[in-house]
Amino acid sequence: MGRELRYLGPSERAEIERLHNGGAPVAKIAEKVGSHVATIYRKLPNGYTGAVDEYSRWVYSAEIAQRVFERNIKCRGERVAAAEALREEAVQKWPKLGGIA
Image 1 (cartoon, rainbow, N blue to C red):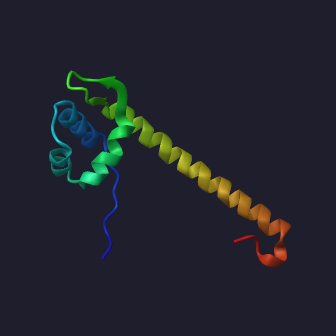
Image 2: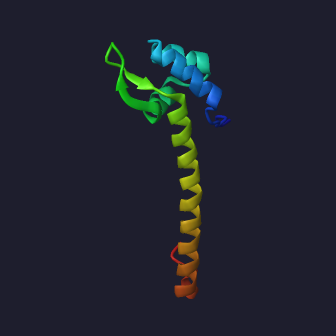
């Protein structure tokens, strides 16, 4: 059985912001959000504002993280379209080989 893949939503990102900026450890954030600790560690840099708090921890913004997520999803679609166009070009250029693969 495989894992169920899902994206973090705006409400989960807001919970991460509240907990992280409140000083909670990543394990506690992961437990509250219902994700693996590694997932939280991977997602935190997407929402960093560039500022640090009084404890020298990076400040996290759910809004910034959501914008980064939406931009990445949009770019993903553009990469797929570009790859399909490249494949079509290769098939036309080398029809006997069926493209490059």
